[in-house]
Length: 503
Ligand code: ADP
Image (tube, rainbow, N blue to C red; front, side, top):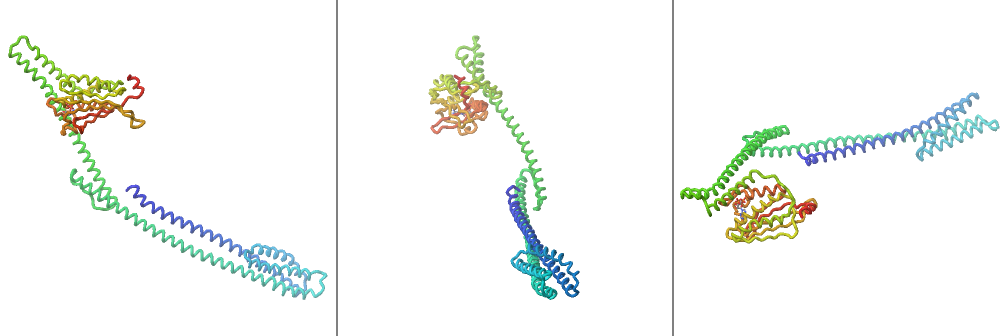
């Protein structure tokens, strides 16, 4: 299961969860707000109602005291009146403050007005200067002002408040019902979406298991051919898949081990073959020069010539000994590469000197040597003797390819660096007008013992390749479209400081 698969599962799940969480949070906030509003409203109405009821009770008490006085004529019933006045006035003030709507303010205003009228009239009647029938006036005050202008509107106010409380409670209940339904819906939706998401995930996981199972079986089928029968249990869940993968892991480990063993065997066989080839090459190379020397020596013995070898025969022996030396050196170079002794020198100058070395043989074969060397130096830091050996190998091969004459072109140039970090490259090209590289060896010319020559060792280009690689360079071989072979050697140029040293 990759990251993409996990994302495919996680993103919808997180989205659904966040949506439900958001809805829940909004609903909870709404519930709390509604509750707070309803509570404040109800508390206010209840307090207003209580204040109005206190006024009502106080005024009824007052009426009761005054009626007692009228009935008995005893002044002791007047004693509680100032305290009642004080208390009812405070409650009325409170009711006024709690009035919230226009209707409430109007109703409480009517009560307050009646209340003021009552007390003004009460004080006027109670005044010692009052002229008239005090008891009759008091009786009238109780029946009209107190009852009609205070108690009746007071009742109305209480009734109004009661209805408001009822309405508020009712609306709060309705909101709670709605919210309960909402939460129920939320719960159902949450559960349902969880179920759908779960089913989706289960299907996706199942599909992946099936796909994995198909892949495991296909790999097992392939392994069957190399590692014998690989048993994988029937399609199931993760556990079966895991067991299947474990089985395969063991088989793959076995196959890899076998591969490593057979690779080692191949390597050992290749090494043995290489040693055999080397031995054959050495034998061939040593026997070739020995044959003419043996014939010359045998002829001298048969002639019973006491003077031994002279003249031409000695020249032949000398040449063959030189050839032997060259072959032995070549084998030594191949078997035991000498360490690099680097110095900074001009590649163009080395090319010029090496061309001079082969000039004699070139002339004998009718080969024209052409050089295209730059006027400025092309400094490289390398083992001069080894680079010269590479150039010599390439030139001798070119001469071998031109037994009946032709042309060899040697070109040296330096190219600009590909990037700031790179150094400029020194490029050496050796091209000839011969028959070109034979198709059979074109791809293998740098492998050891690859040769098409009677007396060749097949080591020259292999040694050259190794030398150039040891210098951090490259060597390529190709056949030119106009005919003949071309070898291109690329080596890193020296830094400007070293260039100065080269002059
Ligand atoms: P050797 O010269 O002993 O054969 P080399 O490694 O130098 O070994 O060369 C390998 C082979 O590459 C040669 O035998 C020849 O077939 C081919 N070859 C090399 N240089 C040239 C060339 N200039 N033209 C044609 N063939 C070449």
